Image (cartoon, rainbow, N blue to C red):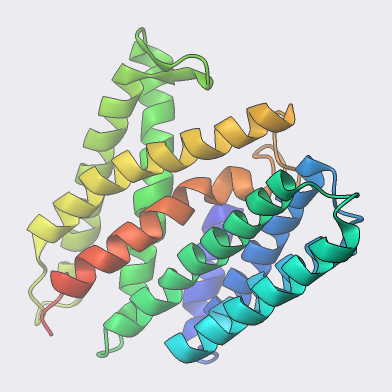
Amino acid sequence: MLVAFVAAIVIFNSSFPFALNIVLALVGALGLWELITALGIQKRYFLSLPSVAIALAVPFCPDFFFFQLAIYVYTLLIFTGLLFHHQEVSFRELGVVYSMSLLIPWALSTLASIRSLETDGHGMFYVIITISAAWVADAGAYFVGSFLGKTKLCPMISPKKTVEGAVGGLVVNVLAMLAFGLVFAWMNPDLQVNYWVLAIIGAGGSVTSILGDLSFSLIKRSCHIKDFGQVIPGHGGILDRFDSVIFVSPFVYLLVSVFPILPL
């Protein structure tokens, strides 16, 4: 299903450029709703509805001014609502939702920013690299850890994660990013691919992927749930699959903004 998700974005990108923005808006909104449900405050509509709305809006903000405007309006709405409903929702709950309502849509929207960095029609290559850097690291760590894992990485947060799996995931991710670069270079022989940047994306993506996974695992433990949902059969909820992307995407955006994979 995740492969189909990426394939759909790539296929529709040329004929319908807003396909990626729509997907990011839906992923962000569903992810926030899962978090709000996990906190048990989904019926506190003064908080839940504006949070879902900001997730839908951020990927379509054309520039930083409109992004700031959306965040400001959202802030006014939920804090005004808290004044009238402070006996129903604690400031701690509002703080969690508010911070996640800023983090999740912003982090996911950097995928759209990554696509716009490449102006020669190869922006989706950057997006594919970014998503793959998160998911390949997860898959590599899982399989290596399943066979070789002995030393627990963070047993109090995620008992199944191991140091061996983390190292294996990093190696697999670096090799996968280099392989992506080789395939892309073969398909576009006139372009020079920066393999050093791809290797850094593989290594850094693996580290930030683990940070994202552990961070959202900590949230799940505090909410006493195993998964955020069952939207993706066998994989849990939206946040269970995109927690690593939320941390990897901004890293890749900042990196390739300074050190592009392809020549400008």
